Figure 1 (cartoon, rainbow, N blue to C red):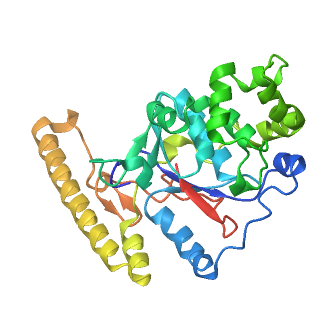
Figure 2 (cartoon, rainbow, N blue to C red; figure 1 turned 180 degrees about the horizontal axis):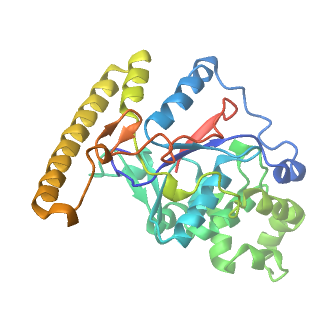
Length: 310
């Protein structure tokens, strides 16, 4: 948020597994350990603080965060809105395209002179994976994903998968019967059904119902409540930063209010005509917005277990 200062923002949470994936592969994500206790206790205060930051907090029942993020990315693209997704999940890399990038803080991505983050676009994805972003799903269909308990073709890693995809052009051609290379067939043919299932597993949903419209995701911190919540959690450094930001906003709005009053006095009844109550610090935000500015989402509940910033 501090690095990019987006106009709109949301944290999107996992809220269960979609039936389409568990029916295809019942063992999907079943190997994962339960959330550690020291992380579990952080969920409630985190879910409380996110809306106070002025960030929409969203989820859909029985929907993974990746799928809802992908649907929001497509809506942003249709609306001509540049989109940055903050995540370390490789599945989302398939959404990278013109106007869509990934915010990464991974050391492997940063390189020299990039500060604390880097925006990954198509060139970075191509350099890292050896294929275009839209082909990431094809690679994952071949390699599987151990993190999600999705088995891959035995003996096929990411480099071999990328080599095959680049040589044949797409997973469709690999599965179409056009392959004649005996070394490729030896590995691929016994696993064709698995690869076909994996393809559906790694494909992201692009048209889910959106619980909150993007124009309502304006970043509008609720400073009084936010400062109180941060103090309660004993986030001393962060509290001081937010207090400085709040004071800067107050000074900015005071200056804007004074300017508008001056213009109104100079222009008379046909001037700007801003009422004194129209601009200023409100208990729930900044700039005359109220608590229904698209920040609070009625969907939020203790159910979500993991969130990613969209």
